[in-house]
Length: 355
Image 1 (cartoon, rainbow, N blue to C red):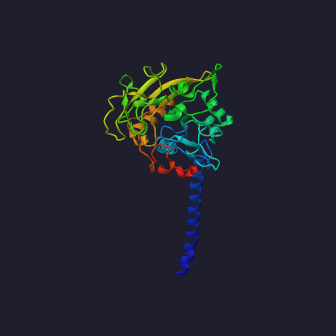
Image 2: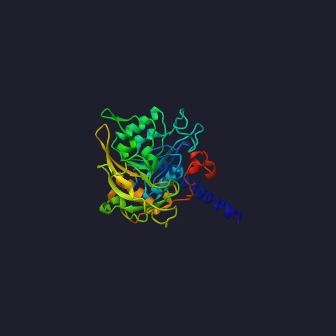
Image 3: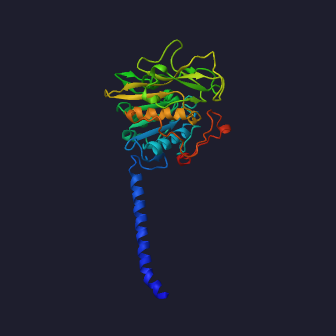
């Protein structure tokens, strides 16, 4: 028996060594794959390497910087979905406070004239293929705004969600010597008023019949969200001529999926596309949706609309699939919208807590 053990021991040790080498190779391989992400890992932002899917080789940066609609929850959720189900490398950047915490409670300059916001990682806009922006009235230092302005001249596409159409204070970009309004000129419409009752109504999305064959609307059904309808142009007006409306929003009488239509309020556009041409003469594809609170993104219709828009913006409309997966990856239980942070449990957190 002892003799057999001595005979088997070298074989056993050789097998163990081989197993360790294989394990090390696998670990190195995993690190190499992670290292292929266009943005290095950092405690200041979140990175999600793309899995298998049509989006392999494409990089999306999502910017969460609002104080009301919980973009710090919805954009990581969208990043997980886009990376796992569709193959895109995704990076989520946040507005951070002086302690490097994601801080929706930080005041805006209307409330505190000294307020300056901070979004680390904007330099990586140069390396991405699409920006998804969800900011609200933020004031960035000039060196960070420069990255935004350069992106606007790059010809690369933009998706703006809800408050993105009043996303910046101190926006100094000019074209041909004329100051540009980010909401009006880039996204196609800026917030003017709530079309209905703020924090009381919800919105039923209605696909625009004339444009129902547009690729962004492929497989999109049952668009509903708890956020109310924005008015983005004067009463009696209409969307800009360079915008193509895809979805109109009908205000409902409450904040439940099957609440009755408000008969006193007509539907207004809540999702459209348009071109934007910057100072270098390069034209970007732009998609804007004025729905989009974190609660709205519990709706599969909203998720598919946004995922399809990402494909279209990157000129990948041939890859849009009505049956593609838009299921939420992991837990998703965002707080409600609003500014009563104590009641809602909204507190500053480090980015990794939002993964």
